[in-house]
Amino acid sequence: MLYEYLPILIFLALALLFATVMLSAGFIFGGSNPDDEKNSPYECGFEPFEDSRMKFDVRFYLVAILFIIFDLEIAFLFPWAVVLDHIGLEGYLAMAIFIFILLIGFIYEWKKGALEWD
Amino acid sequence: MDIIFYIINTVISILTVVIPLFLIVAYVTYSERKIIGFMQSRMGPTRVGPSGLLQPIADVLKLVSKEIIIPTNASKGIFLTAPMLMLVPSLLVWAVIPLSELFIISNINAGLLFILALTSLSVYGVILAGWASNSKYAFLGSMRSAAQIIAYEIAMGFALVGVLMLSGSLNLQVIIQEQSGSIFNWYWLPLFPLFLIYFIAGVAETNRAPFDVSEGESEIVAGFHVEYSGMAFAMFFLAEYMNLILISILSSILFFGGWLSPFQGTFLDIYFAFVPGFVWLSLKTMIFIFVFLWLRATLPRYRYDQIMRLGWKVFLPITFFWLTVIGILIYLKYLPL
Image 1 (spheres, rainbow over the protein chains, first blue to last red):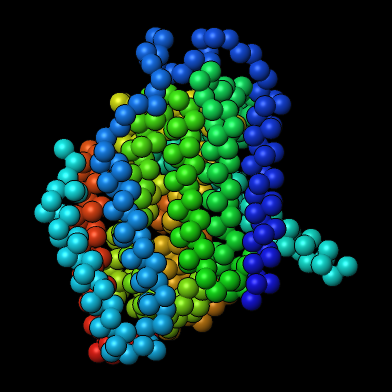
Image 2: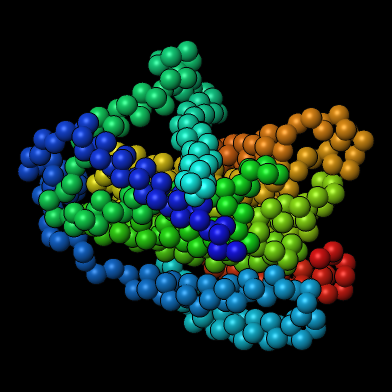
């Protein structure tokens, strides 16, 4: 079983190697000729006003939170879908109830306007 | 001794996937410029080599010889980790993609889960790149793109659940074999809405036009990779195109029978029996790649609120509904398991 994951481990090592080689090739052949203007963050030609790690819209957090809920739901649905032909009516009903509860939550957040961007 | 031979064998089979993949990425960029050029009555690249065929090679040479600029305020370590974090997962995914009946680097039984897990990782590359650059454009671009990627990942995951309900396995080879029979046994027919959602969500996941607000060159220049240059930029670029090819090949594996011949079950089957499965898979994949380019040439960019509305308010209810329909049909034995 786990034996089949060995090629993936080798692939991971190789992929890391590729990425490192590419990045170092860029440093080796690209040269380095720094100056203040070149290395300043890009902002339409003038000096950056302030640190760019500023406040941002709270809705990005909201999207992330909603994502966690629904992604967990998918994580539950995956094994359920795989064993669908072994679980019979009980399996269907259990998942139907689970989805129904989530659906109520989904309708609630829709009505509350959590999905609005304007 | 055995283990050394085994490792050498594996490395060779990995290289037979990865090196052609790099070349394919190079020539997808070439065909993108050519195809979009022709669609807009231009010639596309013509200067380097016959009809511009050496253009991608020239691009690579140029990218290698460019300086990698690290902005003064950037967090250096994260700044250099981000492109690697993008490239490594999008390479690693190819370990579980079945390219023919026999060729697959690692035939694990959780293949689809592995793919979903790795494609989710690329959002870290985007976020870290935008954060580490410490530039406003990069930061805004990465926030937008991350929110968009995770919003569409939901729709994508639900579409995949439909495939799993029919196939009953996470192993991609099994999913393909379950579709054998004829072109009407492929999953595009029972799962047609899910297929459309999967593909459109895939376009949004890869931040391609018309969902490329994270690049949005008219407003935020290039999005999260605006501060990257030279090979560091090339790695983002490579990852983006590999994801494009991955979405195309996954669409053909999950919904269009992978390496199965489209003439299966008809009288034409024996005449096409000599064509290897890999050719069918490549043809199907190429069609999807073409659709990607076609979309980019045709459609104007979506507004950000429209994108979020499409993901949450249109795709999610449709997938909910269709999964219920599929569940009922399977339970009533209208669909084979």
